[in-house]
Image (cartoon, rainbow, N blue to C red; front, side, top):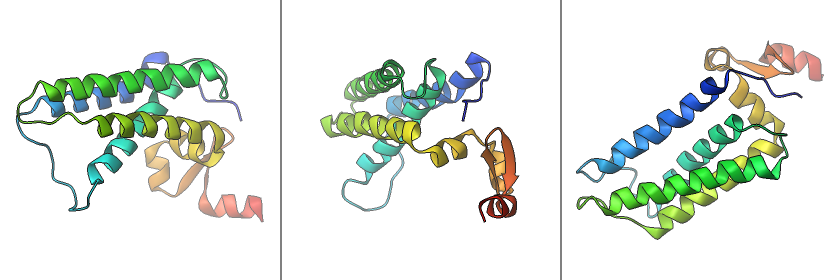
Length: 155
């Protein structure tokens, strides 16, 4: 399946927005939103948020789906942003910088990019417009089909 092409800036907008939200959150004088009372939950949140960011940046960079260069560009950008984010938090007396957050950030980006490259269902979900997902439709080879249509195609 060939990747769908959008104007370059359109692919960067969600990643830039996510980075901006994280930068603002790191500068606030409060600790941030409270999550469930589960040990290490913040690391799980870091893993998935930076995983999403890694996938968004991977979609932005040019190259083949299996390109190592494209993989490393996206991963390095997100891992670097994670380091910058922790540095910003270290300068905020109300926040704590944590090396394990860096590990969660970098590993989340790595795993998410790897999964995006190798799992076509994940790519289709991310490439399908939200309004179509909400209606139960999923992108299949450059066309959007409903669940019922997908079942009849496979069976």
